[in-house]
Length: 325
Image (tube, rainbow, N blue to C red):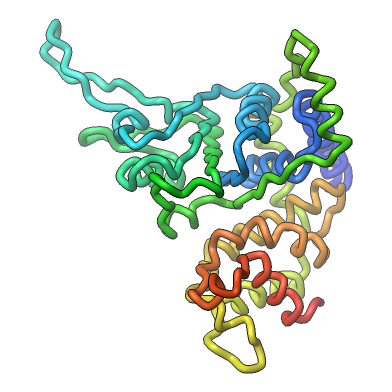
């Protein structure tokens, strides 16, 4: 006997809550970061984490990899890193006189690209095929990457000297960009009290590959009304408007969001409803995920930079203009 959508959604929501609690054993606060990573995992996308050093970004990624029982690799991006160090290369074996493949760390389930903007463009671009196609080409052969394949990249927003900004083509391949904020005073105090504990808190493996596929299937079945679909498209379209006196924000945008953003916003809205245990999407689901999905896809004009406006400020203005269904 097949279970109803309501039952499947309830079970999925409970599994997600257990994961949030399990990761919370090591990571105090940072709920939005944890939710965003889990959301991207279910959506099958990748995450760009931006925050100052020392906010537990690496620990959060490592902990999530343990919770989902995934193979984890961390790559420290540096100016002297080569593409072969990331994806692998062909090595000549003298005994057989043949070239054999030496696979790089990209052949893992969860990849932490630490300080991704410290490596030159040729190394950053080596991730492009892997992130979008879930495969890499070494020599003249293409190799499939393991499933799930999940890239989480970090970058420091403060220090820009000696860094290589990510090109728009690569930024667009990240499902969302999460801003990692400072913890509150109470959370900081709790973190301080954890420092004295010598043994690291163990976490349980809660999400198997089969369960992840089940969560993804349930998320795809979440119902979306036609008016919500039109609302999503209207938000994306509003980011592409040419200069319009009625929409003052348009002068602050050089390039709007891509069609990939439309698909990701739609997908993330459904997963947000799943998080809340609902079988249908409401406008608040779209509003809650739109910042993470769009903030790295809107290219700001010089005028926006001179007025010290951020992409979040522009998204906020767009939401005020687009009618809510």
